[in-house]
Length: 307
Image 1 (cartoon, rainbow, N blue to C red):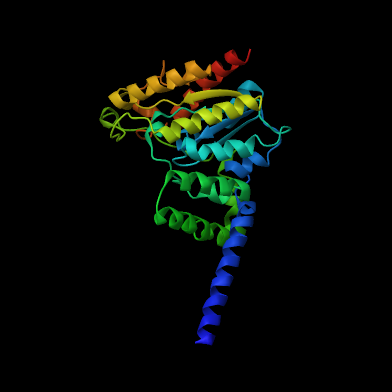
Image 2: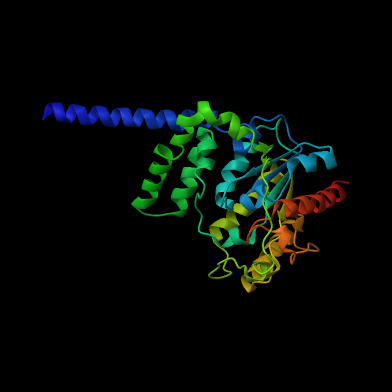
């Protein structure tokens, strides 16, 4: 019995040690050309764009830099909501000497209705330990019961392990897929004309999640107190999605917030050819051609606002 106890205890101790090491050091293996670690290790930036895949597939950082003559970096993770954005913003603005001139936060209306969560484990993998703890606290604050703790244990102990094991073989390939956070060497095709009018985003209601709204307001306050100009921007979606009643209602919520906080709001669908199937890859993302056009339009507005 004593031998069994010692074996189990030793195994648990070893597991705890391995998880602690993973938690403490895995972010050093994160991609250097994308995500949070790419932004944190880049020379001081002029423009940082933060959001979900809606943002990552919506902007061409190279084109923004070419047009504005200012450095730009896109930090985008699948499903990244405002609750999880807040710890990332804290990390990016922590060092006064490295703060960007402008932070562009995704004004995706869908994010306002979501139950907070971590959809893409890579955001946890990329985060330094202090940011990991902040993500854990945010998750446990917005989720109850033992399942929430189990979710965080799984995230810390298991998710991303394949990246650690494959790092010596794939890190060059992963880095080559991005330029300052926006994808390169990748073409997202448009949609068949008959598909575009049928697209919808499933939304049960237009009710704003209070945790998401509070987190967005905290992001605005943090940027303001850090002396960073903040812009809210929403890359366009197909006409059928833009016209959904829930989306129209949520758009008003963003406008009200922007007006109250006196924050610029760039609504990408305004004047954009949202009925052109060649410009969208699905209900929520631009095609490569759509990204190019939207980036040009957004950058023109940015230059006008910067004057």
